Image 1 (cartoon, helix red, strand yellow):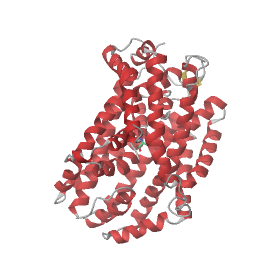
Image 2: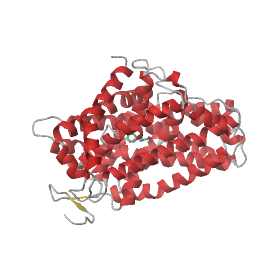
Image 3: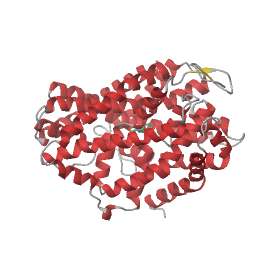
Image 4: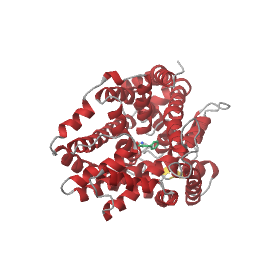
Length: 462
Ligand code: PHE
């Protein structure tokens, strides 16, 4: 087939299908999925809490040996089948084999992740307004802590902000892949980089910034353990949006001439860059004003406002910081919601606006369990965790790694090298034989074993 123009024609069915329209669009949307609250809310505190640079090295290894091959595999499968996550595995698997269950597990993971993710996004959106109004402009952590407490302990505020965020995402998704996801992420991603660099430079210029860099980059190897390695791997999965069908779905919107390994590598490095920048924007400022680098949500919602309130132009920078976080959350949430939406459109022939409405409605119901985890349902615990923590734990430490193993096994042992090579080389147009062989070797023998070992050991089963 010669150069593709929109709409994409599905090789198998001849149906036209919505998809990304330009190379920059592919990059913006895929990076938009990878970059998210994971970079700003999870990465800095997880790195800080688990030994700084030592953790970074393990995380980097997990990204290269596990994240990168799985991401390449998922995008390849999606682009080959040009279908949603379930249909992709159903059509590419030999008949009678139930690989589509991996797609189904992806849809379930998407629901679990969106449930708690949309709540953190809800706090971020609420904080944009609070920052603008100056409500959280206090350098006293006791005051910012009380403000955060008031927000999360109020069930209605928690619910309404979450539902508002879900509605906003639904509104964008209803426009489709090219006019919704691509159009929005193309505008938001450059904005995100500009904001992050501005805030990063400001933070580095503060007196005493070096202590923050030391916290982030000085290795403390004594903190490394099997469960920390599992955390690093789980974070790599979460960060790159893999193991749950997102990249299969986005891969199905990739253009036929897109260079998959090169795009994936760019997304991975840019995502890493954003994580580092987020750490650089946060920790030097935290240390400069003598705050403790708290772990978890309190870092973002209690310490950060107090830090900004302490510095010149802090009000403006605080607004920019929460706008930046909202921007990051948006690209990631669009990709999370797109997983079930595309399944409904592809498998059940439901129109896109209706599929989006159903997804938003279902998520408003399931997600409510997380919105209420800090108030009404605070004492309702399963396995000692609130719904919020449980959904986070289940997805990052179990579902995503399991999904990753299945994708490796499927591509390595069922789909095979020839198919992978045909897709990665754009049917012989690109000469990337060495890269293909390496990715294939990893997928077939190394990556699944690594994931399994880390999972079993990290969960204490080995
Ligand atoms: N990668 C996103 C982040 O880091 C989260 C995400 C996970 C998005 C899984 C889609 C799928 O914030």
